[in-house]
Amino acid sequence: MNYVVDTDVLSTTSPTRQGSVPDLPAWLERNSERLYLSVISLMEISYGIAWLRHRQARRKAALLQAWFDDVTTFHKSRIIMIDDDVAMRAGQLLATARAGGVEVSAEDALIAATADLRALTVLTANARHFAPMGVRHLDPRAGLPPDGGP
Image (cartoon, rainbow, N blue to C red):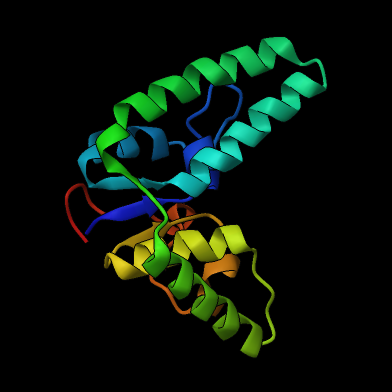
């Protein structure tokens, strides 16, 4: 099985954050060929770094920027862009969630649509954001899948 890594999971590998799943960074590294990133995660992390700079947290911003540069270089061939199909599917997923009484962000809908259209599973610690859209998702806190397996 292949995955789109949600921003919250990707962020657990940053040098400024300790994840709640101790084995997650090693699992991500061992399974990196099965992991994809959405450009939406790049936007979210880039925003976070820019906001730190704005708040004069230069040291933390520089540390995160170096990590982010490594992440984007390493995953370059597995970064998925947003196109018209993803945008339209995201709109449908937003409507599905809203019809169920749940508001989800456009960012999460775009990540969900990216995964859905490519038969990928969203690896996220925020299942409550993805379940209402009816897309496959897995919370690593509930247990990591076997290496190279479903």
